[in-house]
Image 1 (tube, rainbow, N blue to C red):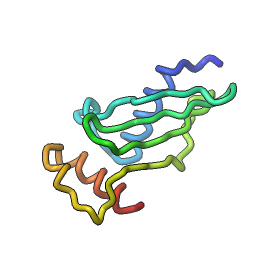
Image 2: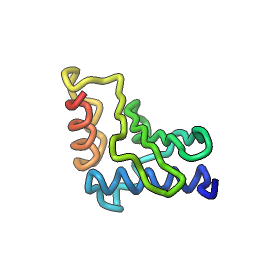
Image 3: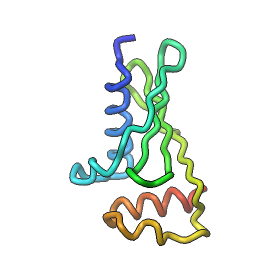
Image 4: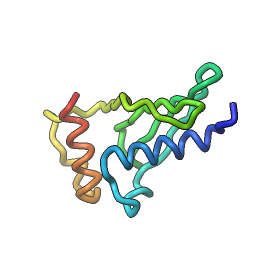
Length: 103
């Protein structure tokens, strides 16, 4: 496989930012939590917002393409409120609210 774990993580992060139209200025709020090689042809990348339990799981193939059907997981549901998001920039909060509400 020519794609490294680090490369796959960066590709997944770029994909998530583009999917949510998140500007570059908010990039540093996101972190690559884990990057696992699955078989010989793809990685599962776990992304998060620093200090929050919410996670995105994105598959990155050896071609550098991401599966658009990523998984979002959070122990916090939309019905539990959003008080924990008050310290985040509005753009990041809006993304987490939308993801939590879609579960």
